[in-house]
Image 1 (cartoon, rainbow, N blue to C red):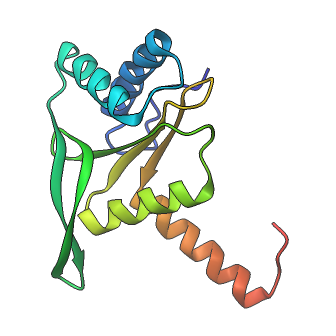
Image 2 (image 1 turned 180 degrees about the horizontal axis):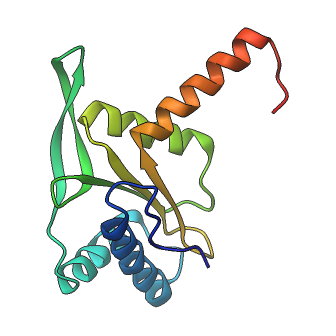
Length: 149
């Protein structure tokens, strides 16, 4: 099992608690439900754990210091951690990219992408540092002309 607290990440203790709550939900409900069912169950677990959150919060999407729209975030936890929920058979790179884009657009540093749809709970901790690292790697890849990792 993955270590839930990793001091390399900002808000590590909080994200570890959130992941623990998600594990309880998945252990109880299993996979196969719609995303909204997991969202409601996770809200109950977060509340019971004493973790402050807002659910289905409309957040501004920013571009060059200007608001260009809004999007609903599944959860904003303690005004610093975004949670994006999925109920898919498997997470794909596009879901990670989407969640990282939301993190950047919301101007938050830390997020979680949690998937309840697989047989085992899937989760990814997200940071803006992670996105910047990926952008640097892509730039290096394009400059070198290599497709090999």
